Length: 388
Image (cartoon, rainbow, N blue to C red; front, side):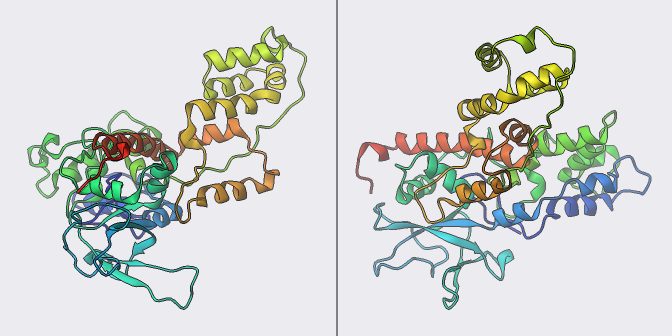
């Protein structure tokens, strides 16, 4: 399951079911006695599973591949050479690339969903040679934000020895050959305590790290789950980054009898105060204080949230990219809100985004895309220089 290949931009790898992490942890749990303090509960393991959309997104890839002298994709040679000249005639990006029948043996394939009579094209690849893949959602963010980037520029930067993969920041540790999904965690293996020192001779170091994280003393189950997904465990980094969360509008109630000074302020003053001093979460919290204040804020809370998202959280919005299937996000977005007449409940939507592993991953990739663009620019690609 992605054991020897990975997304060259984000460090993530594909998986074939949502149980990849919980299964590994369950296997490690079986190495300790039933009454041992390092046995996470079944309810915790159940909350560590990825969704079907996460699985689907992990297998929806873009292949960056050279074009040979005959003008065909250079897919026959597993470890062929990289081009000597990088241009739009020597490198191409292929969408609708996915795992093949033997993914554990690095078997992939190019599919043709719009042509039922077309046969899949098998591609065998190993990380670090002349072919690279990027998650489609990550590729779409990259070239959607920076449409001036072309496939050969991206390929040349990934192939170059000077390519920095953000290992000390946000790049996933599993971008090592034959690595485990355990390594998504924000920890270096050398810094993990030796399990033998605590009497766990049958546990590996990563097993020990995860069992300790999931059985932390003094923490509630919800706190442990938050730490696994968004804290030290960083499981969010393998969640699908274009799975926008659905939300429902805030309910309205009668204004009630108890007016407040805040609820009597003019609309433009309320808007200024919220926009200047409050986050979307804090502004939404005001709705809970009393019914009078809720009635005053509800008419403009979505307008405020929409502006705040556009300015502070643009990664929560769909992006259109100049590539095949580049408008997938926009189409999904429009379909998602059809039931509400196309009206987006922006404040509730923002609240769901804050809790979403996929949107947290999207924010991460949003920043990585900008730093990767800076690498391409530093190599002179955007200055019109010729590279060979």
